[in-house]
Image (cartoon, rainbow, N blue to C red; front, side):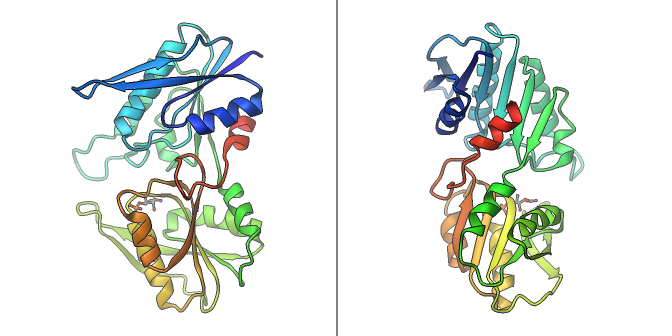
Length: 290
Ligand code: R5P
């Protein structure tokens, strides 16, 4: 099937890798921001055949989101089949009404993808199953966890222990640990919904002493969850501390603060391009599309 891959401005590198694997035609897109802040998006060429748009919605979230929607809308003029690959899907954490009156923005965003004519969506490690339920177009949520774990398998680790910073991530930690052929635990994280303050209350206090620890999470934003978990684990006299996550947003000086908390390496997938994004996700995306 003739395929065109379009790289949104947030994901050009990853889009090129996907196009190469699929032996597809690659088209780039360009962004101009007007003085009033509006985005003007241009596709460099005419899409043909099945179209795959690749655009993560990391900060600036709203700008990257409107670009994704505009690209999908435009390509529907040329193709009846437009697959949106949104490796990091922003707004997925706003998947329910935590406090009275809060708008479930994930539901709004899901409606927008339907409205512009998306035929299928592919996401990597979407924040929650609840977030995915808001879509009314077929959505495939794939995981970069095996790829991250394979990276760590190549390192010389001392009796590694895989740790999820919260109970919600226990299955992820289990999947990671299985690939490393080791065990795992989950800490108990409490987040104040008003202030955003994070507290690690207690844990499955299996002995972590002297063991190399890999903290595994779906994403790092401010870094507070990882910092609190790292401080907690250091107090238990753990060995070296590593962090593996799919989406490393690393807002402001999060990376520096995480390192200051004792973490020696942060490894993430290339759903968000950064210094830490050394794990390629193009193969799992291509497998999900094919
Ligand atoms: C929470 O449920 C997520 O899995 C992450 O732990 C969290 O969103 C990371 O945010 P931050 O880095 O700001 O603590």
